[in-house]
Length: 162
Ligand code: GDP
Ligand code: MG
Image (tube, rainbow, N blue to C red; front, top):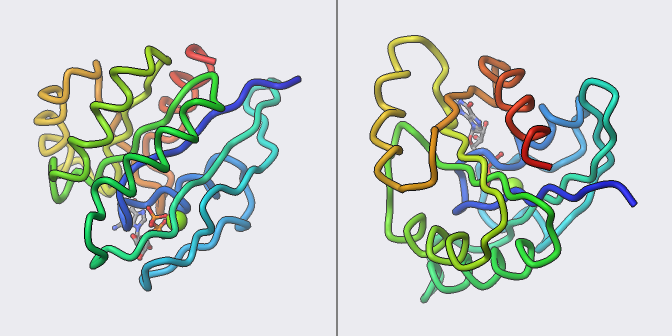
């Protein structure tokens, strides 16, 4: 069986866009509208000749009551099934309550976590990702899922953890 990478984070941080970048195909649904990604969807991926499975998560309405709890609960399920976790944060927004709720789950899981600071579309934005060191999850990997910037280094880090 190939190793499993779960992609978790709050809505709109760019999880599905990053999943498409990782698999090299546009299969994960990217939508400005909330609630599009079903709870968990698996895709076959390959990087530097190593096969793995990527699990996209999502499907919450950002306006829902108790959103942070729902995100955390879904993350907990996905993390439980995974060998490593790609935690995606929107570097242009910073750390929210919902992000913090996911961090608690990740800490408890003891699974390896790779922290993606997404939406770092240009060099100017890179400094904004440094605040994510405060999450205590190690090095934040600045990436632009849309443009592909930093995705090679991120994938190298993912493979090292899987
Ligand atoms: P998800 O809810 O976490 O799966 O997020 P999506 O992948 O659906 O993306 C949410 C929105 O963020 C979409 O409008 C994407 O085009 C946008 N987005 C995703 N990644 C990036 C990025 O690297 N840079 C910018 N500027 N926008 C992004
Ligand atoms: Mg999505």
